[in-house]
Image (tube, rainbow, N blue to C red; front, side, top):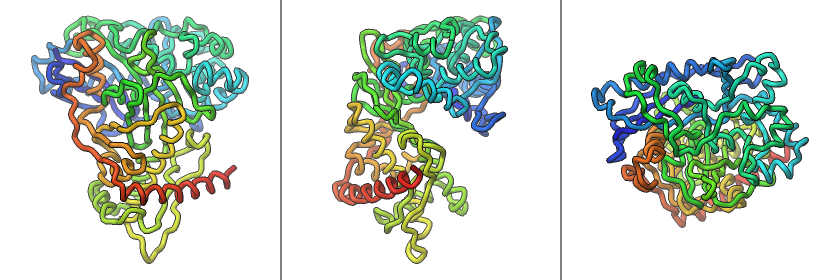
Length: 497
């Protein structure tokens, strides 16, 4: 059997077809080649047209299926990964009522903050494990308050992946992990939070019927199958937000296991069986993809806005036409500690792990007679690694203390310098794998439709492509450098507060 995985991002849609027997990707394609547009009709707003998602999916799928020829008839299950925390609204005819309010839209921040105050910190953290914040429930409350005529037309709300599944199957469903991602879920009662819905005056009938992430959630309709060139009746048997799905793609399913990404922003995602929360709400907790009524599996997510974007900024503004591999080579030629050059990478908005403070990116200790381009590149990679350690120390308070961090072979993890610094700073082994979100979604589909009898079977084709292990000499150097970095960070936080 072949398995189709879809990864709906805010930049593009990627599609992969995986051979279920070997676990290897036979074909992959993404569309568009440039980033999808994000509309900002108001300050801090971010919207996308779901119809554009669908069109880009069909184009990516056509490109993916073309080299497979008649083999595409062997596709037996579909899995969906998607950008988290978005809001899609449809009427009774399944027509989209307004552009989707996507994950990075900040219009509902004040709405969520007021809910945190009125519902009470203790209730929110003990029951929701999160502040209502800028999540889907708060975005829906914003629509109710500010677009009341449109709100009355809403038949169902959906997350971005739910919308894509609706277009494929003509069924409106969601997942339990999706409800938790929208901050609708009461973790103490294992049900949708009545208190949250009552406070926001949200009709519970607007929420789709949930299913487990690994389950058959509808079949490809004949009409859509004809449009896509696929057999009718293929089950959609997996869906999850991008970060839980990234963890799945790396086989991070059991308590204590941790996945990380370091693209524009950085994410540490750990699995736990302990229903705990951070009292300062610097991290978020969701139901993980393999959570069931019998198996408590929670995903603890820490997001750092300012990570790889610092490195890309340097490339654009101080790279002089260099490629990332060339920048990495120059960084590797500089000794650990960058001869006293230190950076803070937090120039991409307010940082949740810094209690929503925005301190900006900054450079410290710059010496015109010593430092050159290579120092800038190494200091940036060190700063990003320091921020990851800072985040991991917060996560340890919820019981996550990894010995191994798993990551895909992409973005900052392509740099040996970054991997070695992070490994030595955190006393963990960094292990890289040959996977991505669309391949992970395909494997999830194989689990959900029952093709794989165990979760272990789904990862037979997952291969290690690189490792970094802690170096005692580097650990000694970077432990001291990290404390210097903390002093600078705390001074900056003190200055703005």
